[in-house]
Image (tube, rainbow, N blue to C red; front, side, top):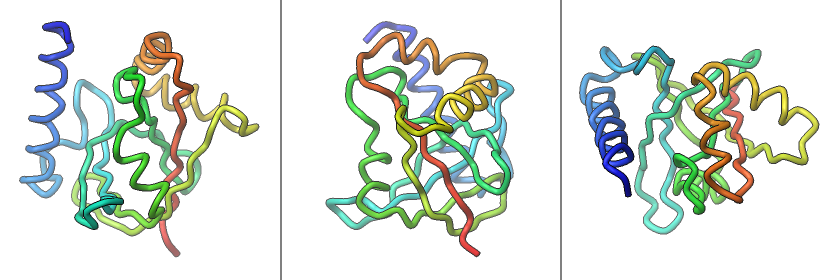
Length: 145
């Protein structure tokens, strides 16, 4: 891991800690981009797992990217929501239950949604996709009615 990657990872961890421990009072925006907290259920432990993720709004749903910074392995949160798609989303101080749906490259809406969230994140996701041969999926988080 490069020094840049190490600093970036530490910054992300600090951001998630602040977002979580201020109950969203601080943390909705990081580096100028909107972030949500995604709470999944650990597929092995059954414990709640929380991740801070950049998102884009698409109608009533929220779209996040399972990039893991271009790592060849998918992030654990994606594996968790595959096993149990019922999640909790927090945006700022607002929390709500949602259902997660994975969106792969074969989905007809993938390119539009990728562009939407990639533009929101300063084109970082394009750079992450270039670092890996793993097709990076998206996840749509639809609030429960």
